[in-house]
Length: 221
Image 1: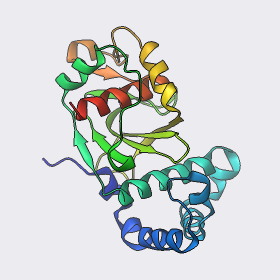
Image 2: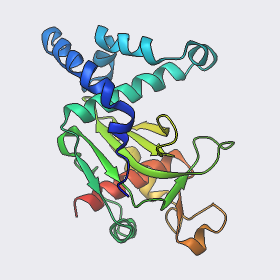
Image 3: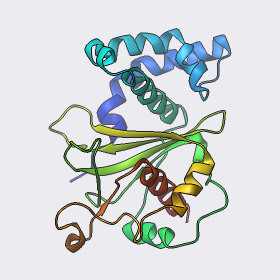
């Protein structure tokens, strides 16, 4: 069975109709789409946010508006960069995870890509009260001020709209620190029966960064 494409599944209609409008407005107004602040100022972006935001969620959660913006920003940047997707194997990830931490952050092809992880291999929660969900992959996007946005796609399946996500915005040095602070063994499972099944778990934002860097390096090895 062919795996779902998270971008097509969640963003294809929006991308086809609205992303070229963002691109043209950015060109005409000379705003840079890789600058989150300038991206958010585009009227075409604000119209999308007004359409997709749930007012009651934004009112009850101060971070919700920023989360909506980040999701649209990541999806657009991935589309604009040509939708590069890289698949990595368990062996590749484990080999890189055991290597010494790199001195610099890895290059992100085109400034945005998606790294597809082995299916149902790694699990995570969006919050401590939520169920564990399989991690399909990671969008990795670099910004004009050096920041890197990682959006982890969880619980991707055809019988639900969209997917769960965990998003972390960090500087390159944060990825190096995450490598040094990683659990031993890396990504040890916390789901019941996970060790026997050969599964892995992500339990902190630092581990999201650690996995993103490991997977990115594995995709380029």
